[in-house]
Amino acid sequence: MKILMVCLGNICRSPLAEGILKDKLIKNNLNAEVDSAGTGAWHIGNPPDQRSIEIAHEQGIDISQQKARKIRSIDIDYYDLLLVMDEQNKKDVLKYCHTPSERQKVKKIMTYCDSNEDVPDPYYGEFGFKNVFKLLDQACEGVIDSIR
Ligand code: 4NP
Image (cartoon, rainbow, N blue to C red; front, side, top):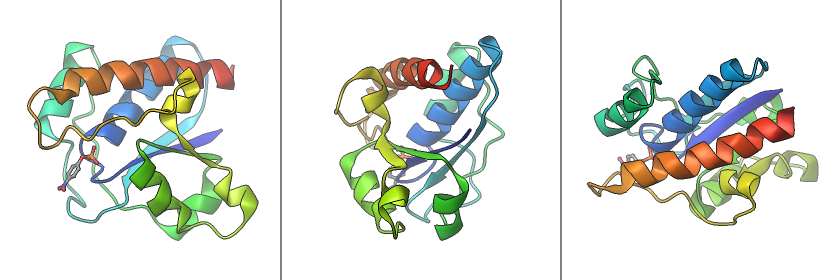
């Protein structure tokens, strides 16, 4: 199973999603390939936002070595699942898809805990990161259940 987490900048939400899912895979003795990417190019090569690094660190998860990248067409073919954070991410990733089976790989991550809500972009706020971590933690539990 190969999973790509996708947000806008690949510095706040999707790096957290990647770190949280990798942590849960290890704790559950499961195997999957996980990476993350952004639909935008502003932060290519940068580490995650310091606020994401800190909120992960508080939970014993190290995401500091991740590097932001932009999604590429070949990611659609390569990954089995592309888990996006919000409706805009979904629209942007669907532009890379050419067939119904490719489009079916693109899912909002919160659907894994039976919600259609967006994981809100925390970049411009001060207090959003704890909530983002909580939502992604719940969603990734659902992803683990679906892999198991
Ligand atoms: P992310 O947050 O999509 O969760 O990584 C953002 C990070 C940067 C920007 C927007 C959202 N930006 O506009 O630079």
